[in-house]
Every structure is written in structure tokens, then in C-alpha cells.
Length: 293
Image 1: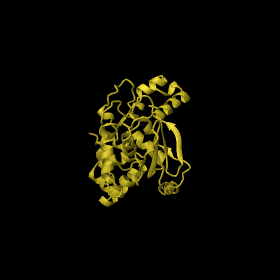
Image 2: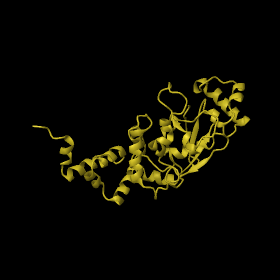
Image 3: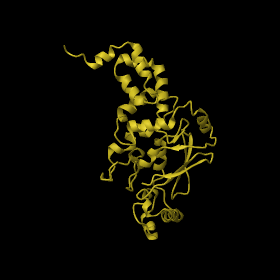
Image 4: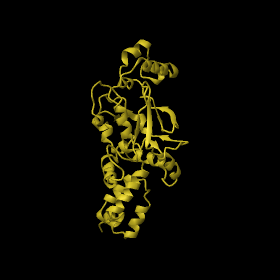
């Protein structure tokens, strides 16, 4: 007697059991939900009509720590399309800071919106927060070392796991090619307004997004600063950092003359180190320093 294919047996189950399977998938588990939804038309219908699905996928994306990019507006974007595109393009990315691993970590940092409702209301009303978690993915962002005009989408990329990979930007590592990474929130809880202070620059740009600032927004803000000229006082700040934290924090030993000869614009700083602090406009600063690249 020939065996019956497993998928035939599964799809012969009554709707009640298929719904039970769906309800036992965590709400934040965007990848599993999309795969389950796409498994067949019958299961897709369990997610409701278009309006019901839009509500479902919007909440799933939120719980997975994903927001808007480019000129999108949360109320107008199709979250169904966002969810499907993210998983189709990036859901099974094997980079340690992307794919399923990133979705799971985001969800852990988000926890549940109900549990953090008070904290979220504080954040979106620019009220002082006791704790803000930074997006660990930021430590893996790098930028081209070449002095040329890059389009924003062709500049930022994910640092490869292996140091053996050439410095030339690999297309597969471009941040723009990783929608899950691009859409991940920069802070947890997500903030609508953020200051970024960059070592060696005097001004601290502020950027905002009503629905929560994402890695994409952060990347665009940094890109706009890359060709800013460094002044003498900026270079002094760099050298002071080197003296304070030691050569182990940089890719090379520095001298006063070496700093003057090698650092002209902010992009040069990225050849050796990168330190940034995030802070909300209420002056509650996320003081942890990280991202030495």
C-alpha cells in the first residue's frame, strides 16, 4: 500500500485544527505566519478578508519590530505587502544580523505592545524614558571607504562575518537589499524623534518618523553627513578618544600627524572607528557607546 503524501494528510484536516495551528504560531513570528499563509489558498483564507489581513499583518510587523522606510506613511502603506516582501526577499537570510534571527531578536526587544503601552505612550509624547534599548544591528553597519558620491541606497551595507571578504561592497550585503534590516526599529520602544551625535562632528542631527525611526532612517541620516569636512577641533576630539581608550579600539596606531594627514571628512573616520550615541529629544540619553568598526 502506497503512503499518502504528508501535505495531503495535513490539508485534509478540518478547519478547526488548521485554525488551531495558526493560533499557536506566535504573533511576532512573521516568517512562519507568511509561510503558513502561502502554503495553500484554503489556509490563506483563515487569515480573513483583505481588511482583516491588513490589520493582522500590521500588528505582526509591529511585534516583529518592523516599521516604515523611504516616504511611506504607516496609515497608507500596505502591511500585507510589506510582510510578504520582507519574508520573500529576506526571511531566510543567513547573515547573523538579518533574517529570522533579527526578527526573533526584535520581537524579544519589543515584547508585547500591550505590556509596554505606558512606555510607548511616553515615547510618542516625547516624555523622558528610564530605559531605551538600542538596535544591536547598528554595530554591523559599514560604509564605503572610497571618496566618491554614492547614492544613499548604494552606501550602507552589513559587515560580513568573515574578515577575508574584500572591502569592496558586495551587492548582497547592501543594506538596501535587506528589507528586514532596513525596516527594523533603531530603538526599543520605537521613538518618533531622535538625535544622533557622531564622534568628530560638532552638530547632532535630529531625524524623525511618526511611526518610529528605523534603521533605514538612521542610515540615510549618516549618509548625508559622510562628506562633511572635519575641523581641527574635530580631529582633536578624535585623538583624545584614541588616547583615552587606547589603540585596541582602532584599526591602527595613531600619531598627531597621522590624524592630520588621514582624516579630512567623516567618511575617513569610518576607516578606523565609529562611535555614536542615541538620545531622545527629552535629553534622556542612551549613553552606551558601541559600534567600533
